[in-house]
Image (cartoon, rainbow, N blue to C red):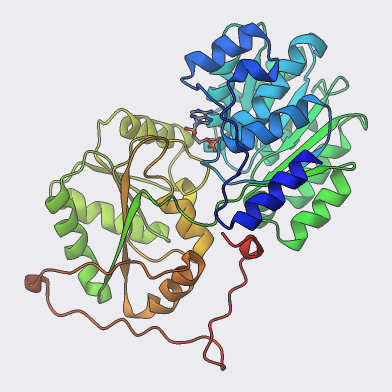
Amino acid sequence: MRYICCFLQAIASGRGQFTNFKNLNFIEFGLDQRLVEGIESSGYETATPIQEQVIPLILSGKDLIASAQTGTGKTAAFLLPIINRLMTTRTEEHINALIVVPTRELAIQISEHIDGFTYFTPLSSIAVYGGSDGFSFSNEKQALSRGADIVVCTPGRMIAHLNMGYVKLDGLQFLILDEADRMLDMGFYEDIMKIISFLPAQRQNLMFSATMPPKIRILAKKILHDPAEINIALSKPPDKIIQEVFIVYESQKLPVVKWILRKHNFQTVLIFGSKKQSVKDLTRELKRSNFSVREIHSDLEQQEREQVLLDFKNRKINILVATDILSRGIDIDNIDLVINFDVPHDGEDYVHRIGRTARAENEGMAFTLVSEKEQGKLASIEELLGKPVPKGKVPPELGAVPAYQPKRKNNNGKRRFSHPNHHSGR
Ligand code: AMP
């Protein structure tokens, strides 16, 4: 009940902030000392609002549906109580918790978090994801047949293993679906249901989703038993992100990007393109102009993607050009600037993309290039944000720019806004 009250207060406050957020230390949740050591060495001092809400709920054994985006601390919110519970309840040489996620990158990232948190505990884990070589497959096979306390997987790869019959799931205690909305968007519904058909009926189920469209509610009804519901979706980016848009003609985008990069000379810049081809073209052009730049998209082999990400994280390259593959769930700190080379499809994607900058205590900037065709999309995003995004000035030597005159979408002169979280007033 306390959680429901908090939720209502958060909505009432209209700020998406939990008014009675207590800044709890992790020890106050009654977590095992070895786990607390892992948390501390991961650099966490106090719990985020979602962690404060979710950790006690999961510890109490309840099923849960949580509307929470990346950036809220949702990963630790489910990992910490699961790890804590498993330290006393795990069955050795079995799979005790299964975390299903949409992408390999997210699987790897969650797995890294688990490694940090469990460092001082006896728990084991493995990430199981597609697209790697035969060697990884046999490694995964070995771990899955011998048992690993926590398995993080992408749906397709897990099914490939499940079909072979050696996966030890009879002792499973936890099922977690992370970024459930994204998994449904990617067509994984059948795969998820198939995975569930292999699991024991008696288990605790946790579902996390950035948005709550009706299909997520239907999935939740099928999978969860009397779940608690938490809503910490941030439909607006943090105020500390300095946002600017540049209203341009399509042909001006490349010169404007180069001008921005030269003017600011930032160490880490993430540029998003909606299409693979535009990502490839832009990277080629920037290379030609001697920028330190690489690209990442689904045409790259898994190993190449990991290497590019690593080089970017380690500052071996300054600029990464990416498709939306990186807009959600990927954890790269200290990005100084996000550039949207084109306008994301909707406000939610915009918030996800620009949320890659200004993480944790850092500040950041987010610039968006808007062609004439994209002005309507920008207007929708501004509606989601509840205010116009400041318009940046393009230097005169790059030519005259179009006026910002977005077309209205419906006939009563008002733009309709259908964001699933808009009722929360955030
Ligand atoms: P997430 O929403 O799980 O993707 O987490 C977003 C970022 O916040 C990640 O870089 C986490 O490592 C970090 N984070 C999560 N919880 C905390 C915490 N309690 N204190 C500091 N950083 C945190």
